[in-house]
Image (cartoon, rainbow, N blue to C red; front, side):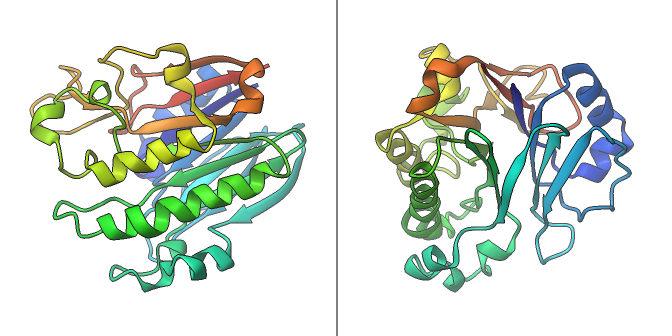
Length: 267
């Protein structure tokens, strides 16, 4: 089974350019998880009759949003949107000054026959780091608690744009970015906690060391052409699934967004 995650930075634009259709036809994912769709179902002219579509759009038009496309024939037992309400209350997520992040279409969980697949578009810390408290004290712990809750029922794979580079090897210029958005101690600690909780960073499972492996590039100064990027898109898997994890890769040659897709294969 091939599972792909891609922050498309606006599904309508990537469909209009033809990059989305070309990607699906070439790679034929069994499960395709999207972040930052910036659209509601039906707003993009997507003609993929072989897939069942699951959408979770933000209440605010043209903002955030996630979707999962599943090849027909793969049984979807259940579909869940957002973080559970009890966790939102526990971590006071509704009190964020920017608005309730659980109304921004950031999480979809699907229960498949053998495991849960979850996609997440993690809130950005903001240039002035004003959303760091939300990330550190509220969103990251709430999301992780949700993953652990699901894992009590079945193994979990979760993916998405987590808006943080975990280690210095995960961005081209770690020193000048230390303490800045996407590379603060608080954000990086969120990944530490995921790993401590038993979830495995699939890419680093196969490629434990080495830089140059990036999933997002700024639009400035030919960053992508020069591969001056960040690895902020991930697939994490329950340890139970490691014997079935056959591959994890970054598809850096796929254009259409400022992010590229990341893929895992489960046997």
